[in-house]
Image (cartoon, rainbow, N blue to C red; front, side):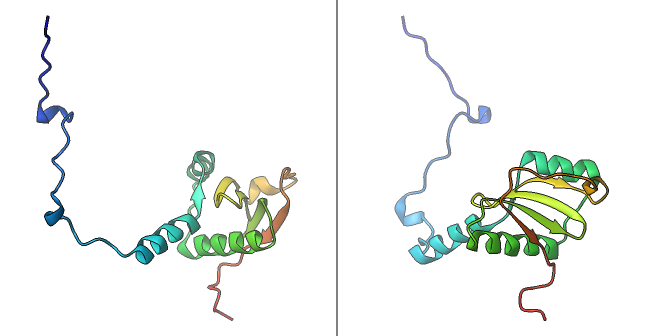
Length: 133
């Protein structure tokens, strides 16, 4: 017995045809692909828990603060840190340095009388650009 399955393009089950080599866009150079990948690897990520904490507490981070966090993680990484406490404008952030991921965020009011465990370093984060004096 033979059962036929009919797939329809509307169902999303069929893939679009692949372009033939002559229709492909020019390939990027290896160095530009590598540079793009390295840039992505250097970006700061936020865990689902940290994002939820930010949303629940109405905390937004400016571009300057995000840049400061990235620089602080670079500094912690240079010193061999693995899990660090970042102190920034009264906020406390716990980060995994090798993963460049913020694990949790504690707003200023909740930071009073708080003990942070499982960290091996702390960095006071500045929000001025690295080249500013």
